[in-house]
Amino acid sequence: MHELNPLSRSIAVIHDTTLRDGEQTAGVAFRPEEKLAIAESLANAGIPELEIGIPAMGSEEEETIRSITRMGLTARLVVWCRMHDTDLAAAKRCAVDMVNASVPVSDIQIRSKLGKDRRWVLQQVDRRVKQVLDSGMDVAVGGEDASRTHLDFVLRVMEVAERAGARRFRYADTLGILEPFNTAHIMRRLRAATDMEIEIHAHNDLGLATANSIAALRFGATHVNTTVNGLGERAGNAALEEVVMCLHHLHGFETGIEVRQFKAISQLVAQASARPVPAGKSIVGDAIFHHESGIHVDGLLKNPRNYQSFDPEELGRQHHMVLGKHSGTRSIVRAYAELGSVITELQAQSILKQIRVYVLQHKAPPPVEDLHRFLLESVESLRAHS
Image (cartoon, rainbow, N blue to C red; front, top):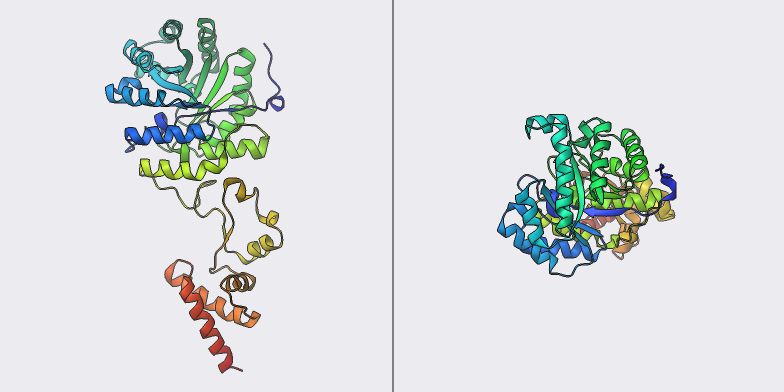
């Protein structure tokens, strides 16, 4: 086996886990109809793989999963299981394409959570991979807490998994402790040791989930776990919208995903999770294409490329000029022109003073009726001083 040149690969497979790890966010619970709607929206946007639930949660969860499998979606459907007979039996009843069979691989979780040792883990991997394959489903072995164990043991787990017939290994940064440089080193080692697919599962505890996901894909991973809006346990997972846009614009990776649908999907998940999206959230936030600074607005009006890293039209959106404390007179002139009024530079300067007073009091841009009032007051003021 040999290490792949990261620059030679152009395909990155998105495996979205909004319906599994996203729903594990404390306080979040999707209704069955919401899960179906989210699954359909993701598949329609071209997400190739969806992790759609945990069958062992009970009969209602199983039925919801089976309802999704009956929708005829184009995405590969995956469920998450522990390496238990009951979990794997429940997965078999759901008729999905693939099982992510997860097992802790860090010493602290093996000992204090399972009361077992490394030898037991290796035996389980060999046994359970074969068990799932006999059930007619593909297998991904999920290495829970992989980032807190010695890399040599991770490689040993992967060796056993590959020999048993697993298709993929999920490297889970369960507590979000990785950083991109170490991630790149780890992925190079994993890639050099196996022909299996490698999936990165990054958490955002230190705000590095997207960066670690991109680093993993650049240096050996073939698949990446994401969630819409970065939903997930504690600080969340790598955000679908961030990972895809980074891949497209920074590295030329092709995902085949329709990014114009991100905003609608984000709103759907925000409503179902009761987790509002911050206005400044990258890619999907309401205010990310709003501009107030006079210098920025002037630059955008002269050439949008002065202050945009990508065209908002790519996402089906557009720039909006906001009047506020940091606006310049050119913004004022333009705003009034859109309202059908031609104003002078002196009027713009007078109106800008009124706008600054307004936004300091109200913490919001002035509405149209106030803009009309400001214009009348500026006219009267300038006439009085002439």
